[in-house]
Amino acid sequence: MAENINQRNDDKVKYLFTQEEFLNSEVILNYFLKPFLYEFTTIMKNDIDAKLSFELSFRYYIIIAFLIVLIFGYLLVWLPFQYSLNDEILRTKNILEIIPEILYEGVEAMINS
Image 1: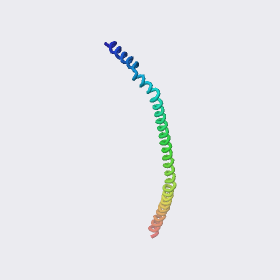
Image 2: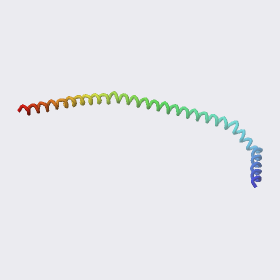
Image 3: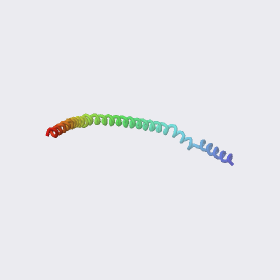
C-alpha cells in the first residue's frame, strides 16, 4: 500500500517535470523572479540596517541629553539647595550653642539671689 502511494507520488513528480508549463515556470523563476527577490531582500536588509543604525544613534542622543539635563539639574538646583541647607545647619548649631549659656546665666542668677 505504501509503495503504491510512493509510486503514484513519483509518477506525479515525473509528470510535472516533463510538462511545458512547469519548465516555463522554472524559466520564469530563475530568470525573472530570482533577481527580483534578490534585489528585494537586499533593499529590505539595507533598510533594516539603516533603521537599526538610526535607532541606535537616536538612543545615544537621548542618553547624552539625559546626562546633560542631570548635570545641569545638579549644578543649578541641588548645589544651591545644599548650600542653603548648610547655612541653616550652621545657624541652628549656633543657636543651640547659645542655650547652655542662657541656662548657665539663669542658674547663676538663681544661686546669687
